[in-house]
Image (tube, rainbow, N blue to C red; front, side, top):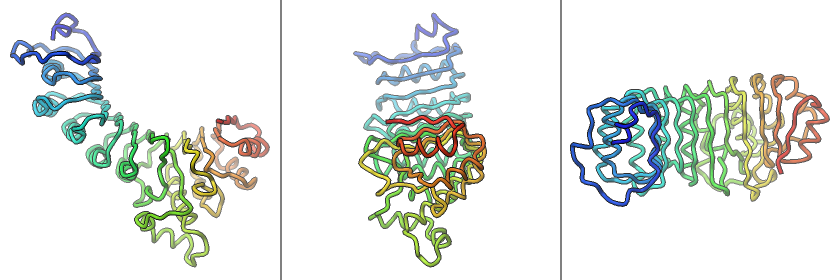
Length: 338
C-alpha cells in the first residue's frame, strides 16, 4: 500500500472507488511497518486483500466503516479483525449486500475492542440480536436504520439489554413506525439513556395476536376490571418504561407517516394513559411530538410545566399543540413542523 508508505502519518483512509481489475495477491503487498492510520472507510467493493493488508499494517485503527463488501478472501479479513485490532471504538456497517450475515460476524470479531459507537444501516433482526448481546455492556451511542417490520421488532432487544447506552436513534422507512407494544416485552435496561429518537405510535386496532402477549400482566394491573381499551393499557405500560429513563435530556418520538392519525395510532399524553409515570423526567430539555401524539388537556400541560422544569424547547406538528402550550407555558420555545 504505497499510500501508507508515502504518508506514514495518515490518520484517515477512504476507499471510495471500485477497482476495475483483480490484482495478484502477493507478499509484496504486506508490510511489517506499523502505520498510524486511525480511521478506515470502505465505501465501495474493494479487493479484500487490500483490507487485509491495511489491517495487518495498521494496528491502531479506532474507526471502521464497511458500507460495501464482497466475499473474496472474507475469512482472511475476519481473521485480521479478530487478531490485529485492539483499539476500535467506532463501527459503521451497511447491509446493502447479499452476504448480510457477514456483518453479524464482524460485530462478533470486533467484540474484544473498546467499541462505544455503532451505526448500522438496513439492519436485520439477526444483527440487532447479535449487537445487543455482544455489546450490551459496552455500546454508548447507537444509530439504527431499519426498514422491515421484522427488523423493527428487534429494537426491543436494544432497550432490554444495552445497559451502557446513552444515545439511541432509530430510523425507519417512510411508511413505517415503531409500534409501542413491541417494546414492552421486558423492563428496559438502558437506564442511562440521555437521548432517544424513535418514530413511535400505538395502533388502536391491532390484529397481531403476538403483540397482545407483551406485558399482559402489567396491563392487567393497570386495569384489573378491563374497563379501558387494550391500547390504552399498553400506553400506560409504555409510559412506565419511559419514565424510568430519568437521565433523558432529548426525546424525539415524531413520525412522518401521515397514513396514520391520532385517532387510529395516537398517544393520549393524558393521566389515563399514564402521563404521571413521566414525573421523573426532570432533566428533559428538548421534546418532539408528531401528529399522532395528541396533547389536548390544559391540566396535563400544567403538570408537564411543573415536573419538567428543565424543558427548553418543544417541537410539534400541529398548530393546536402550539397554541395550547403557548398559552399554558409562555416561556417555552415552541417550533412547529409542517
